[in-house]
Image (cartoon, rainbow, N blue to C red; front, side):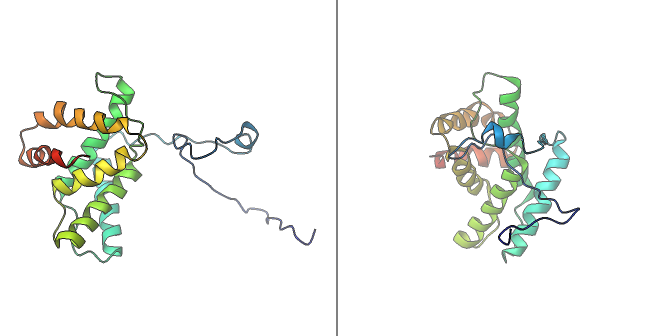
Length: 177
């Protein structure tokens, strides 16, 4: 009994897990029964998701000592790309479904990586080419087939946008692995 520690009344442990992220071992049915599962769906409103990525990435970059925020146009590319790739899995369009997790939290991580990369490697704010480098690493880290899927996305979707930041994004596609 001396080696056991009991929680006081009102004490709770909150843990999170991404059910798509399987890790090394699958969670057993017995263990799953001991948890309450809440499903958090992607943010449906583009403007709301973009604002969250803008504010969270700015906070992380400031905490990292980076004097630049990632430009809004680059963050728009990031959020739109994540939403497009996430929607393909939901809508079962002609685009293949990615196995990578395309959550808002992952978008914030990519935005932070873009800012850090641009500042420490080029002493500037992030650009679409930095986004290509960072997003490619995020998407293809778990499944080699996602590389081809990401390339198809650039050819079928990114290429159709006429705005300057989209064209710069498309022109940087040669940086994809």
